[in-house]
Image (cartoon, rainbow, N blue to C red; front, side, top):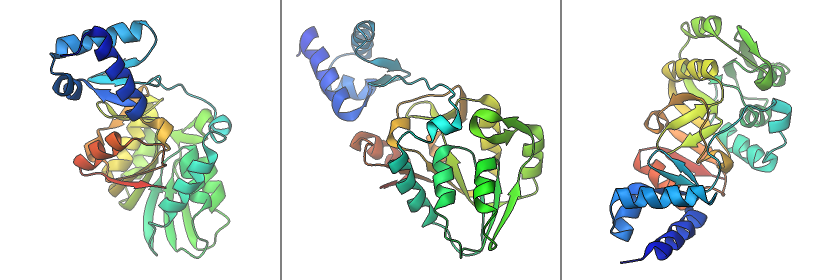
Length: 254
């Protein structure tokens, strides 16, 4: 059995490799109790070597902050564009889709082929402006309270309008994906609108670069089991992919 220093080294090495570790898995591998593992994680967090989460720990700060859309658009831009291209490839002629807000879904909108016949409902002003120039795409802009930091609308009016539609696909941008807590955003009202979108859609497709994993926003959108498909980049760890696939989520890596 490993001593304290050896356990800590094992935990940090595994965390460096996988970005996220689970208490249950560590108990099995190290053959110690969950109480021991939680004490180890607390000691390592006190030394600023990791961040504890519900049921485990992550190497990155799991709590996201709200930032302006023009600032977020510059982060991971190459990866976001690749994710957007992969998402656009999932579209079929005559699809009716709903597009939520976020910089990754804006890259998706930029990659939609002009010849595609679509009906698009969106809460994102920048997405609507991007698609309005395409004559083959019918765009319906939701109304409501303007959230300036994300260039999108939210609130009761937007949710009410959604009740009149049903979509083939929802393309959803998120601020955080936590294996225990689920899919999140930094705004509770936006999270509520996103839940309404999920309820109105046949399939939910999350567009998220790998930096979103292991992070948690203020507002929970849904659990991972409610997601059908996640498109992300090569920075995602194999452990997270296996966890998602175990829940029945299709994972596309670009």
